[in-house]
Length: 160
Image (cartoon, rainbow, N blue to C red):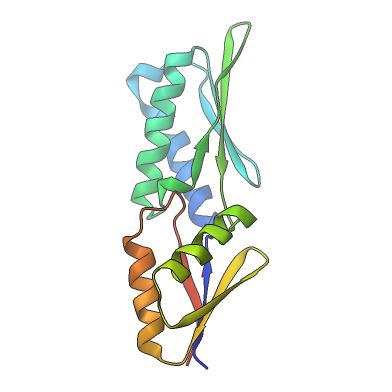
């Protein structure tokens, strides 16, 4: 039977390229001359460092611009509250990957409510959709692309 998987993944290589480009742009910008502002990437987050809080907003705008330029959906960014200490400010931007259990249940419920002739089941951090016809699966893909969801979705492992 035809099937495919619904996942939410990030290309971490493109994320690191976007962070590197953002660091280079901050070093070249006139309004950041002499300011200790930088981006620092961990495995699942990007930490922005600046001297004052309003500079963090500018850093976030630069990061979002570079992410969009690298074809990374910015809905996967979860911006935390800024932290201020002494003459420093820092803010964490969490990179959301994978489908957590409540979000996967929401996707399965949406597919069932649409009354499409497919079966969907949660498998870890992805949702597997199976159906008798390829056209039914493509209808599900189109339906989920048009749905207003808070995470970017990708469809992979399409089997005929």
